[in-house]
Image (cartoon, rainbow, N blue to C red; front, side, top):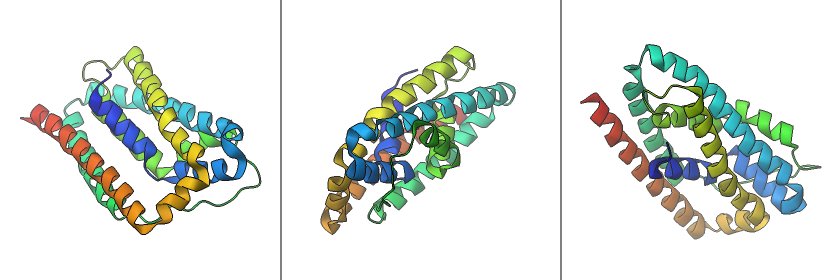
Length: 201
């Protein structure tokens, strides 16, 4: 189940700028790391639950139409390449100050309306749920791994808080950060695409 590609994909999707990380940067800057822990755990555990539920549903569907997996995998990889381009061109992160840190439950529920989280979860399940292992143990394992990989990645944003946001507001630093993330995401996408094309051949 565990693979370098899974670690790379979930890590990069977790650490790159998005709604969760922008809110964590603002929370870390405004309330400190300790008060942001419920927010952090809500995101990671909510992510794992989302992977589990989507995995159960997609695993059931894939058991009936397993030929769709490579096609969906290619589409997912194409999206990753597009996302790499968007990261390359990404603007500076901004976060709005809040009166209090986001709660565990609010952060967990936010995953269900976060477009980046949906793309991440769908791609993860399609690309990394092993073919022929559409059982609950495989889905639980994938969900747990995703939550465990996700947590340290998103902690970076809360730890650095405003310092990270200010660092990325410098154009040269922002360009270097986005360029590095984009290249790494594109390499991951091409590596996964090769695997999916091998299944089609």
